Image 1 (cartoon, rainbow, N blue to C red):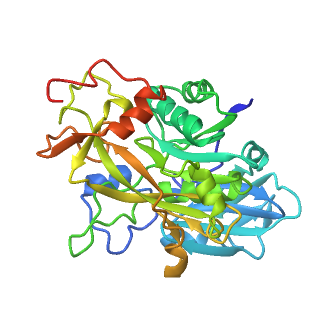
Image 2: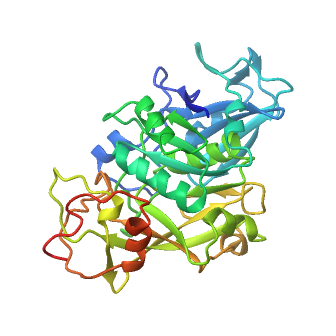
Amino acid sequence: MPHLITSLSHCDLSPTSFRRDLLPGLIAEPEDVEKNYDTTTLWYDAFWRAGRLFLIAPTPLNLDILFSRKHIFVDGRPASRIKRKIRDRHAIYSMPAKTKPRNVSVHINDQIISCAVNSTQEAGLFDGKNACLLISKDNNLDWISDYVSYHKNVHGLQSVLFFDNGSTQYSLQDVSETIAKTGVDNSLVINIPFPFGVRKGRKIDGKKNFRGKFLQVTMLNLGRLRFLHNARAVLNSDIDELIWTSDGRSIFDHAVDHWSGISRFSGTWRHTASSTENANHQVRHADHLYAQEPEASCVGKYCVRPKSITGRQSWHVHTIEHKSRFLKNLGNDTEAGFWHFRHISTFWKYDRNTPLNIAKQRDRVMEKMLIDGGILPQTKRAVCDEA
């Protein structure tokens, strides 16, 4: 079965004087903005599908003026009838093209930046499949293997779309081979070496502001439009999250069987026996055998059928994006959820090794599923003196 690696066709404005403005109302430390805020990517990918050329972009702000006949050229000719959909943290530009163009370019004064136009031929890997979409940077290869193996064995996962955000600990080939060894039908690993977004953005009132993180939401919608539009169902979750259902059906069946085409579910934290772990000890999912008392909930994730009323909307980190509260709240699933594993992390967001003053209870139900069922390996220190 094919396990492929590819890249996107992005437009980088670094050679020009154009830069993306800082989002209005976004407050962050200057070094955070300089390192993590994407000022130069005009679009992440250019691809052709079903008679239209698509440019999938971060929130354009002042750069929106470049998406015009004056600046965008397709095979050397000014683009025509450009449609724009500006959404939260991303934008979708499209224009008619009867056949696949060779290239698309942006013309700024005497400068021309040209990009090849991708096709959607890799989308066939996901047609009719139970698929998942992952975005990752330097997560341990064992964690990736555990995540894919678990969802393959428990839920019937068949295909993996994996966006690698510039990992330095291993190669794209290493990721592809790791996924292939789990036995899933196929996978596609894509290099996305772009800034992830402002880490600690806040609003004027001091509340968190996530709108400076363009990459994740845009990749979800690039996945939706270019690769996953014909998938049976798509799971959106992270490597430190494993999905469960209580009725014997897979999470993919939950999404497919619901008239809205989506299953939305919440999560709870799972912990190792010790509140902290030695930096040299590489824990696995199956080392997290303890529930927090009382249970600490996590913001939800979802599984969606692309060809549904919900699947055709913009995909977001925790739900679909839509102005209709009715659509956003469809598919609330009380027979599904996920375990969130505290130490499956590179600590990129915050240090999860910080000691916690909490009560813990061994989760025998999860233990039976993960250990007794032989789904995941358990490392030697899974149970320590604190158990």
